[in-house]
Amino acid sequence: MKMLTRRFGRTRLEMPVLSCGGMRFQHSWKDGGDVPEDSQRNVEATVERALGHGINHIETARGYGSSELQLGKILPRLPRESLIVQTKVSPECDGAKFRETFDLSMSLLRLDHVDLLGLHGINSREILEGALKPGGPLSVARELQKDGRCRFIGLSTHGHCDVICDAIETGEFDYVNLHWYWVNRSNARALEAAARHDLGVFIISPSDKGGKLYEPPDKLARLCAPLSPMAFNDLFCLRNPGIHTISVGASRPGDFDEHVCSLALLPQADALVPQIEARLNAAMEEALGKEWCARWEEGIPPWEAVPGEINIWEILRLSNYAKSLDMLAFGKMRYNLLGQAGHWFPGKNAAEIPDLQRALSGSPFQELIPAALREAHELLFDKPVARLSTAD
Image 1 (cartoon, helix red, strand yellow):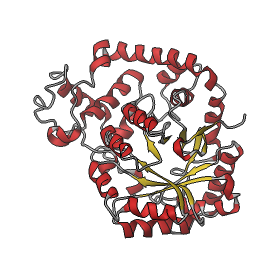
Image 2 (image 1 turned 90 degrees about the vertical axis):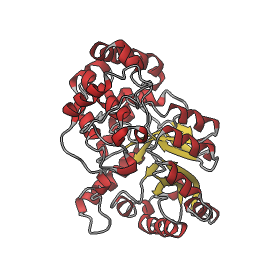
Image 3 (image 1 turned 180 degrees about the vertical axis):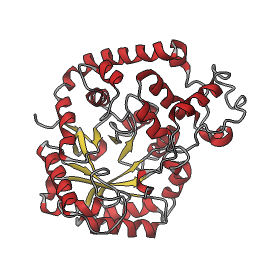
């Protein structure tokens, strides 16, 4: 089938609803060095498969190890006018360093411009404020835009919804890369803000951070039938017209196939998705209790306001899905990052639980949550795991 496209907000780019994310096909998370021939062949075959499906948005970042280097061996051979290329540069630096890093990205990609330049990791208010300073990263990005080296400027974020909304409300950005999928709808207000400002919306990692859906537990697979969990999540996201593209973090050419097949069912999404959601919600209520499912988020303070900086909301979210839908592998993958990934995945785990009564004074489950956190730690803790881009 012909690839579906959506207008990418005020950029007016015709964006394919599936994007080729460049975070997982690279040879190494380390920068530089030799790339084995088989790894390069795999990257090129993956990009070619994407283009064969009509997926012409290629997304990468300076922080993705050898990704830019390897893409730079194929992108210059392709018709530039048919591609939408996005790279991302960290704004945690001064303007001069931002420009230097962007120049390195361009030399590796072997392109004279990118269509989309993202400020990578606007994950806290401090990073946002630093990016907006006169002469800072955003100012430099604007200069690069005037020079024709990037067409549109956006941000990527793993931050709290309040920070994302504040960034959108500045009016400075043309698009946003953020998280939103069935197992995490906490950025709903940010989607609304993006729609008001006509921003393009790119969903980060819907199949991995959206539930490790490429390796679903049997219970989740049964409840999502006749769809696969991955196809269900694709339809869940794309039935929202405010979402313009979702990332396929492909590590090999075949990783696109199931996503592409799911698009044929998009016209039926308004019938299929609510039926599956009802089954999933019923299974969660049976395992956790109806009142808990309806109200567990009420009165949960942000991790910064919790003694010991425990990320209560995230821990309970992961525990809920692990206990009710058998999403244990996903829960462990995320839980063991807590305390290891800085502002990309902030807060700490529940290894040590101080007195939380005051912090939980607004929760209807004030008395139950400390025990729930201890249970979650016993269920999910394995060993600390470093974020991929910082792992050895």
